[in-house]
Image 1 (cartoon, helix red, strand yellow):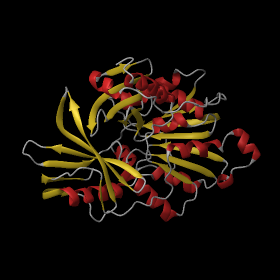
Image 2 (tube, helix red, strand yellow):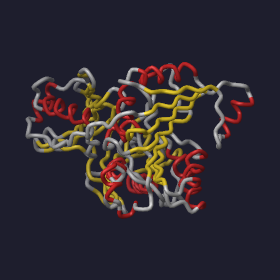
Image 3 (cartoon, one colour):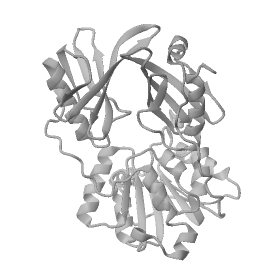
Image 4 (tube, one colour):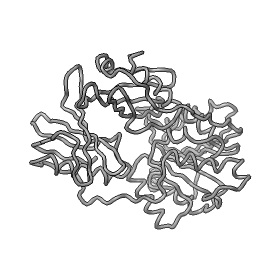
Length: 411
């Protein structure tokens, strides 16, 4: 993340506008009833809101950096915000890790989770039969690749099958940027790219819409299994979103991870699975070439969906908060975790804003396999998320608990 260190910080009362940036408010972290050395500055450029973090260091200098959780979709916006903050409030710059020449990222093919869900609806059996897809009328199949990395396999598939729409999901943004540029150079018209957590994106997809899911060489996370992209919950979701006759293709060189993933799909009702060892494909990545040269074994699993799943229940709930007593919440606040069968809520910290009992709450919540971290801003006994969470079942459950926490029903 872009950052800089300065010796002197003269942060005048906010709000302050400087160039494109509007510095709206500052919030100081409160821990055990005392202020810490960390503050948040709520910042806005055009329609993008994000947070700048200030950390006072032991040598009386200040580390200024962007917050990862609420960072803008375009990193150049954060770069501009930090540059404006530096010019407006800071002196005696010690280090500067801001790319002053950062250009706006105009990524082709880039969409978000909600857009993916809307697009997927066009590929249900009913809509395909009606042949009414608007922009997608030239495509008769819809496939996903989770964690496409260098993009070699995804780009090969998209180029080889022009009448299939491919969506690639990749959490590593530099990989997405690289593949986006390559796809533009290749002139592809059947590709979508998402820089998101695949586990959350899958949970939003409508049932019976995906023809094939590719999961090639994901990080095995053998020391941290909870971080794996495939688990029992994700296996159930994949089974739901696949069409009857659809296929999930897992490919891995890690036997421990492969066996654990296989067990997740074997637990599904009437599982139909084929397993291969050292199977050859039309396209292989540079990493796979290296592993083959080292005579490492490669394991493949093909899971075949053999049923039509029920439609995903529509979620008529929202992420609004009822009015509450902020003073009472602050008096009772503790860093605490609330665990339930399939979701949790963890209160990470609270930051005091100017004004009586106004604050920003940092919290993690959602499903154990796909948690999210968010900020809630509370002013005048009213609260809202600085960025609305994805409307997943687990996030909505966690939100109900968050409401009870703010009203001190369970705090």
